Image (cartoon, rainbow, N blue to C red):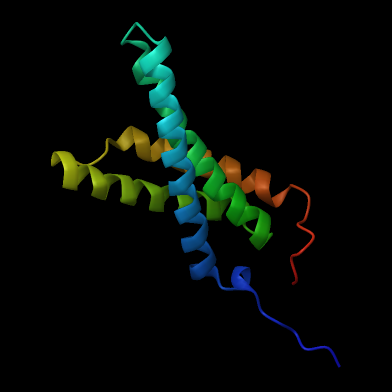
Amino acid sequence: MRRHRRNLWSFSRLSMTVSTVLGVVFLFITVLAVSGFAFFFVSDFRLLKIISLLPLFTGAFSAGFIFGKYRRRKGMLSGIICGLLLYIIISAVGIALSGSPAHISKLFLLTVSGAIGGITGVNSKRPKNLRD
């Protein structure tokens, strides 16, 4: 008889934490890439407001996508929760560094992009090494 082994993705809180941390990592990598691009190629500072939204989108999208791809259920809800957790982390860092939390429009962007990532992850191809 085959024993049913549980993996990381069968625990919702642990998998949510892992995918949110990976979303923060992707957000940080994208911040580094965008800041390098802005330093070398952007001469108009009005474009920086638009360009600065790209790391937020990629971080929340990747967190929702990873959680949705490996959990394989409730993609939109899990993506929204990942976006909310990312907003809490960004607000905490903002309070620690500048004394003010992140603006509420960032919450909207993070939850929408996390939901899009979660839906895309659930509807993507199933990973080969995933055991249910």
